Figure 1: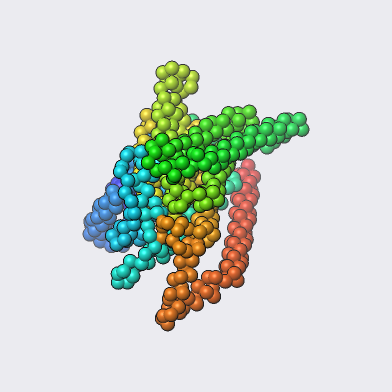
Figure 2: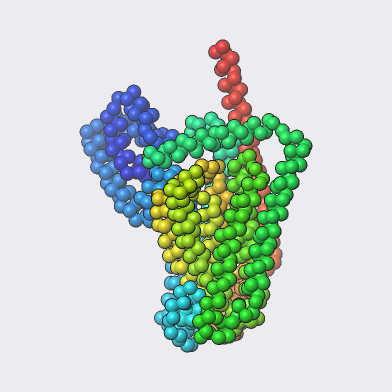
Length: 614
């Protein structure tokens, strides 16, 4: 296990070999001077001690020769494995130049790309390939005009990119392949099982690491001064940025403690509360106004459904881009207005300012998506014959336009801002890399991709290409145009907040929408794999009814009828989850109390030692 830890960073095996040949005092000083974190130095020290001990109880020359050979082989295999990891060297370079706070954005982007890549592979293998090979569902063909790349209609309308390109036939093979079951179970297994549990696991681990283990006095000023240095940074400019950030964090920590001691007067409290109330009213008013504008624009029949009635009209096809452009403009302009509103509040705590900004932007983006989902599920099914494909095309357009606005933001918001700040108005300086805004943009785009996965099974490939391009463009823009943020708060804790937002309300809302679509809405009668069914979920009823006649499959039917369709089963599951959650919460509270007691004992012992020495 220690060997694996040593080989995480190439070159560690030579370091251990050199340390073994030193005397005890020189080895101690050499390990202390290593530019590594405490845990890495601890691993190197323990490994060196074990090797020296083994050399003393065995033939030194033979053992040392075999050890060097083994470490060299293991390091070569570790290097080969790391070359297969996507962006391994690039991420190390970003972390070394800009620190872990900026690196967290790129790690989050990579994490989302892996999610979408796996989703694309699953959908392509279990849904798309059987449809293309055995039963192509192309009723009419339309010439490619180029505008389809932005609108997703026309030529793409009858392709496997959208819901209407699939049918519900049973492919005759050995064994038979039911496209209805394949479509239903593939989407359900990805959303309900894979994404749900991976998000829950990531959120719980991140919360335990960044909140539970880093609360209390250990995260105070002494901890920041002695233990918070980012040893991955090697660039001189980035080191200076880290020094400035550490100084700012220490000042903020001290100012927070002074504010706790210096209580405000009643008039100052009323003034601050009035400003906060005014800011929140303005922010919620902007969010409500934006949602209302999108609702009335989406429900306008001349703009919303004109292309469906006249598919050969290029002007009508171009008009479908109006709603995505308005949505992207709102997502671009309103957060800037939120930044202006936050200035009137004069938050003394930068961390509170960051969290308030995140909450307001999440409310804005989720209200927009909620209005769009309400429109798609209540108005579109009654107005469009193949409404599932229409929803998929709408999500496709939102993703494409959002990507275009992201490119424009990189050019105008970062490149031109850097040119103006360094050449024209030097008082503006180099723009900071806004981690919160960029991560929220990723969450918004990922929520769209999850919404559209039922209506467009191959939509994850668009998200993969988009994230891949954004990664390199953001890296180049970061290197040329931006500097690390000065007020980062606790980057690890903010990253946990982002994962929590991705889970709720983002993923939970998407899961609710897809579940409502599958359980309650009648599918289109003219397209898609669920034609002729009352709801898509009825394909499960048809399947269980068909296997009831086979004696060897009676257990499947019994489980479905007596367990999965029973309200008592879900009641018991919920009760068990609540009981387990309560016990885990009690264990956590007990550990917190134990940690508090141990800290008090440490303080008492330290005070006793000081008294005895004096």
